[in-house]
Length: 214
Image 1 (cartoon, rainbow, N blue to C red):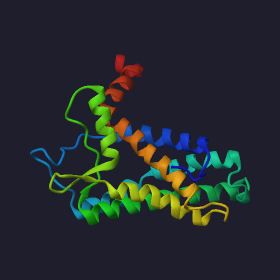
Image 2 (image 1 turned 90 degrees about the horizontal axis):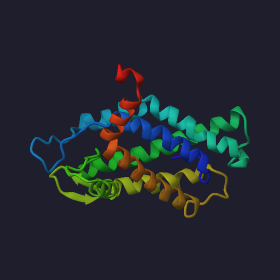
Image 3 (image 1 turned 90 degrees about the vertical axis):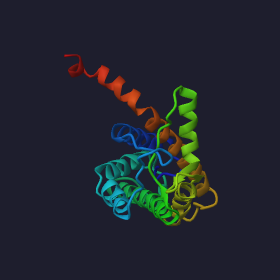
């Protein structure tokens, strides 16, 4: 989520950036347990990583935005501030992102899990909210069965723990790394909530758009 392992400012900036982008980009997908479902091919999986992540401007905007928190708070202080310090923070955030996405996407491919989010085919805020929570820890395999989403958990905690090794020595993978992993999982849940309710959010945004009322 953020290069700064303790900065709430950096986390908030990145969360706002990504949540808005996810809400705008979310499309309906037929779930694996419904007729007409098509699993992702190997080529489509590569496209998700190469085009949806590496070639997406969202990745770089989010990396730069998240680094602002650490730059303002001068955390870690060993990196200093200014162009050099900010550049290190942006690079570190991008590295954290790449680790997280890489671990998750490769794990999904190896286990034949579908990495996409599937909205609840139900009504009611509580049911849909529960679906967002469930999809934080559960994934569908290519046979439509629900499985514990190990790739998401491994990506969140693995990337956070590994990223501490390029931080100053006072950062520990078993302390700050695990703490950041908790934050990553909370962020996944927040993103899922936006995905679940994005149709309603889009309608509200259209109502606020003056051009929609013409």
